[in-house]
Amino acid sequence: MGACVEIVTRFAPSPNGPLHLGHALSAIIAHDLARAAGGRFLLRVEDIDGPRSRAELADEFRRDLAWLGLTWEEVPAQSTRLASYAAAAERLKALGVLYPCTCTRKDITEAGAVEGAAGLIYPGTCKARPPEPALPAAWRLDAAKALALTGPLHWDDALAGRQAADFTALGDVVLVRKDLPASYHLAVTLDDAADGVTLVTRGADLFAATPIHRTLQALLGLPLPRWHHHGLLRDETGEKLAKRRGSPALAQRRRAGEDGLMLAEQLRLQHFRLGT
Ligand SMILES: [Zn+2]
Image 1 (cartoon, rainbow, N blue to C red):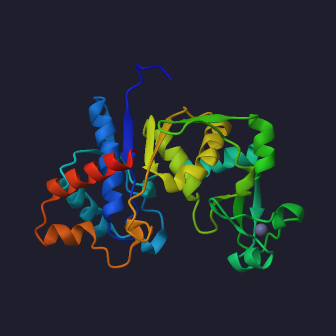
Image 2 (cartoon, rainbow, N blue to C red):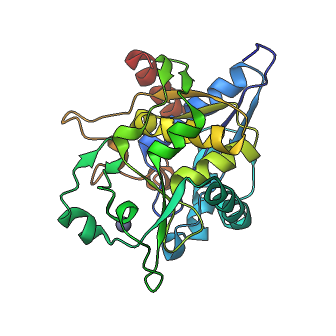
Image 3 (tube, protein in one colour):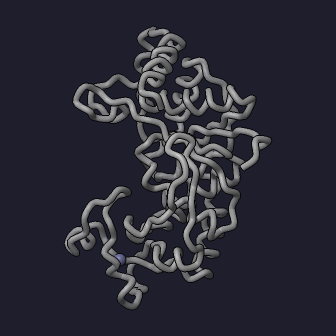
């Protein structure tokens, strides 16, 4: 990728719970990387998780980011993009790389599935049997067929360097949920392309899933971004701060009168010490 490519980063929170320190760090890193390069920093609300998505939380997110001293351009929320997800799923079905799966989570665990780097590794039950049209179906990406179509792929992480994009070890992941026209993997890949994101900045917890996104880009002919996976804030027990029970939400700290600009500086310093 040439040096002339504009840096476009994004922060894409889901309004199904308040933002915590880990979210703040992600937003600050994405913001700073864009600003340092004279680029653009986008906010995208990932609000397709049904009844758990709450519009008032998205308003809180905007107040939190402003309190941290960040400025952004907001792009359309995921709930306005469902037609584009359905269209992409049809293209993937036409390529023959999706198959319907009627398994429940219980079916999958009872089949002896083990936890992988991106959730339970699907044991392939539905791949080996005729579809059951009477049952609600998710659609899974056939990893082996996808790899046969794309050939070996690579992706570039700003910190970890060039990576092989083989995701066969993750199993056949869901791209279309039973209740939604996309899963996280499909939606985030399409949205980043539609928004012109050139540097996908997010926590290291999503590093392992990136080969799936790289493969979808190849299958759907989407532009190729770079990635920047940053280290996660952890407490003294090693637990992710974003999830820590009892760790106050940003909104709570904001309402208590804490100085958001100072908090942002502390997070920048901590991050600088982590070296990521
Ligand atoms: Zn299945």
